[in-house]
Image (cartoon, rainbow, N blue to C red; front, side):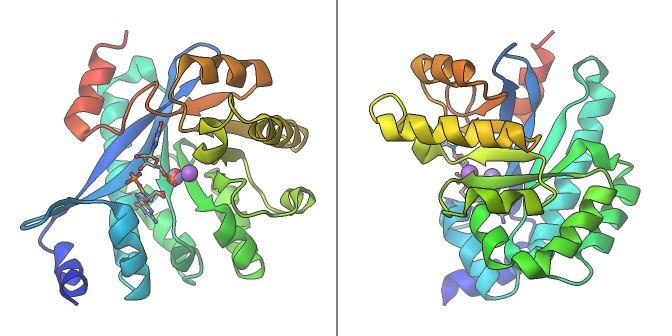
Amino acid sequence: LQLESDLRQALERQEFCLHYQPIVSLATGKLKGFEALIRWRHPQRGLISPAEFIPVAEDIGLIVPLGEWVLRAACRQLCAWQAQFPHLMPLKMSVNIAGKQIREPNFVAQIEQILVETGLDGSYLQLEITESTLIEYAQETIHALLKIRSKQIQLSIDDFGQGYSSLSYLHRFPINILKIDRSFVSGMHSNAENYEIIRTITTLAHTLGMDVVAEGAETTEQLTILRTLGCEFGQGYLFSRPLNCASATALMSTNP
Ligand code: G
Ligand code: G
Ligand code: MN
Ligand code: NA
């Protein structure tokens, strides 16, 4: 397949870049951090979405070196912003991690090396693992998750609510943040069930000492409800789309 062979060469040809989507405090509107989102600038096909190439990268085993590149680039970028915008700190950098990465025996050592190399303190890094990965590989990942937490790195469950995990199961994992899947947020005002799901997830998260990020917030009506429900943070087009590096830097320059 052409996409596969192109993907294999894309790393050394430096065709990937990161975009950064702001995550904000719902109470104050202040910037809390960014989620790093990979993009592929294909020389012929233009920008290709990670939804298209990340599954392929997982299939062909490229996700491990690719994920390492993402982690290093994201940590470097946060260090640069820490130096440039000390008054906006602390900001967190959130990085998506694929199941295959966590199951690599040397994953934790790799992160430690990247932190040493970039000089980033682990407490500013958050790793996002999807709920389905967590459930599917609970036994294989728990040890790595505990080691990651011992480095002060925070753990988020991404796309929460999609994986139908039993809620009581959650306390077994050393998770700091639940990111509520955007499908619940987008259907919230027209669908009483979605509203109840968000309310229940938020209550549970708080009971377990976790913070909540509502994903995919697009309207002020949603913002008002999410605030009322006590969600701490929001991420979505209402606040900002994912930004390239220059635009994210410009956002912080105009943010007193
Ligand atoms: O940014 P966008 O909406 O196109 O992202 C689509 C999907 O790709 C999302 O589910 C997101 O979590 C995933 N994704 C984006 N960047 C990365 C990455 O660096 N690593 C992994 N594993 N997934 C990513
Ligand atoms: O699965 P994950 O949460 O990592 O996916 C993040 C993706 O969600 C990003 O690629 C981003 O483009 C997309 N996204 C972020 N905010 C919104 C939003 O408000 N609406 C929609 N439809 N997509 C969003
Ligand atoms: Mn994510
Ligand atoms: Na998500």
